[in-house]
Amino acid sequence: MGMPNFQLTAFNKTDVFIRSLSFYKPTSSRYKILMEANAFPSDHYAVESQIQLQGLDPEKCLLLLSPVEGEETLRADDILSTIEKEGDSIAVIMFSGVQYYTGQLFDMASITKAGHAKGCFVGFDLAHAVGNVELCLHDWDVDFASWCNYKYMNSGAGALAGAYIHEKHQYSVKPTLHGWWSNDKKTRFEMDKKIHISPGVNGFRLSNPPILLVRSLQAALEIFNQTDKKALRRKSVLLTGYLECLIKHYYSKVPDNPQKPYVTIITPSNIEERGCQLSLVFSSHISLVFMELQKRGATVSRVLAVGVSCCSRFRIAIDMLSSTKLLRS
Ligand SMILES: Cc1ncc(COP(=O)(O)O)c(C=O)c1O
View 1 (cartoon, rainbow, N blue to C red):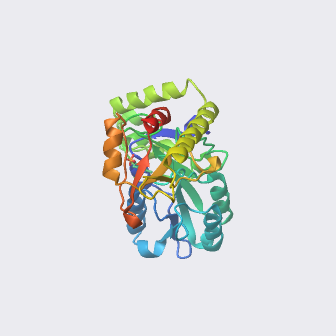
View 2: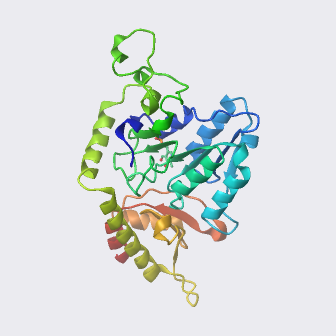
View 3: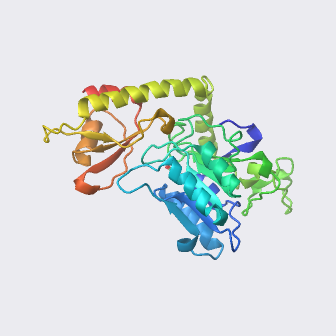
């Protein structure tokens, strides 16, 4: 994760961390939260409820950034220019590291730098970035982050989440909600009513972590420990590029043959702007694609939406080696 251990904790759920977030301290002039218009729904719910908890109106406080019309992903320049233009009224910038739907990898270092230059706190939902791309949260000076470990961390659906707060905030940013696990380890079991909040991110923990979820996360981390993030990324770039190449080779649109099914990749083709996820738009109906993949033994995660021209969309996040075999079958 690119940070000292004390800045990091295993934590309840991604959503719970974002909800209990203490970085949002709106004032009359700085009260907005900037996020992607197409962020994962639970981020929207959490941020909206944060705004409402402060007695404010999400309509006025939520600044949502959409791609340029006709495009799927956000332009880096648009993100930075919005921060430059609106930054004085923005309290918190919250983006994803890798966009769950398009697979776009954001330049977290630049977003953080631009946000800090305007006096905003900057944090990321890393649910699709952790275990997928290299992260240097501490060096990038990111203020906070949270992520679930379901996906590229392989800890299983509903696994324990992770949370990070930069060490510079360890005494200044306090949790709004307290639980017995926010207590310093030294006094946690003294069972008196005076809480001694652990500094930094550990103070944000609420309850005793469930043992089975801890074990599945531990097992996954032990496997990750057998390699390093640079080696993982090197391999991932090659496998993802190979899959992209096969998709383009077999399933590009052929203008002379409109009956031939085709696949469009909406994830950026630049490797600096993506992790190992390729998001695909199929010309065939999604239920057909889903059925054919299942027949071939693929476990797929899907997000359905009916797009214009009756295309269905399908986010494919399956193991790259098996997917290259599937493509050939
Ligand atoms: C991008 C993103 N954010 C948040 C969540 C929700 O995580 P949790 O269930 O740990 O609150 C998910 C879950 O899939 C996700 O993909």
